Amino acid sequence: MSILLTLAILVGFSDPAMPSGEKVVYLGYDAGNQTSREITHEVYNKGDYYYTVHTHHDTTQITVMCKVRMNDLSTIQIVKNRSGKFQLGIEQKHDAILVQDGFKDKETKHKHSGRFYDRHTLLDAFRGYPFDNPETVEFPFFESNIGMVITGECTLGGIYEVNTSIGKIKCYKLTLGFKSSFVQTAYKMILAGRSFDFYYQVVEPHRLIYWTDNKGSYIKFLRVESK
Image (cartoon, rainbow, N blue to C red; front, side, top):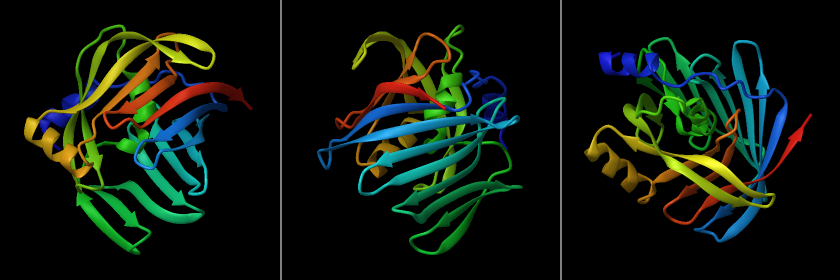
């Protein structure tokens, strides 16, 4: 692992003390298909890691189950199902990242000896941004569509009020970027030109209130349910 990626881990995200058993409900909108659905995001404290369940409540019934380390919110494992069938698995295995493609019934290994962050876990990982000491946080970012670890960036873009079903909520705006402008451009091309902004409640434990891309898709906070 490079010195850059090592430093990224040391000065990156930290545990925001997410409430165990909490379920946050969002309204999700897909601009491409012009469809809406409820999305739930559940978080469970397992002692040395968080276990999250992210579910789209529509005909596709996408469910993403993640394990992230508690100290720095880096990725341990991801299991993604669609309509009850296994779609994607991502897991750290010694000096590699194991990717399982359920559609193709195929496994691939990508060499990487350190910790990493995956896009499926960024909703929670960015909650650990150092809001009291704002700076651009660089982190090792793995995208299975690319098949490599690159240097991601998380940048604070100010404080905004977001309109929700329960009124206006003051939020920090964080933007996902990349160290290399070439990688930034290439990544956007792979994901059809999309870029991403995350809005987190200023009040701790910094729940995600609003996520949007530059194509008009979004998820927006509706309510909190506690088990």
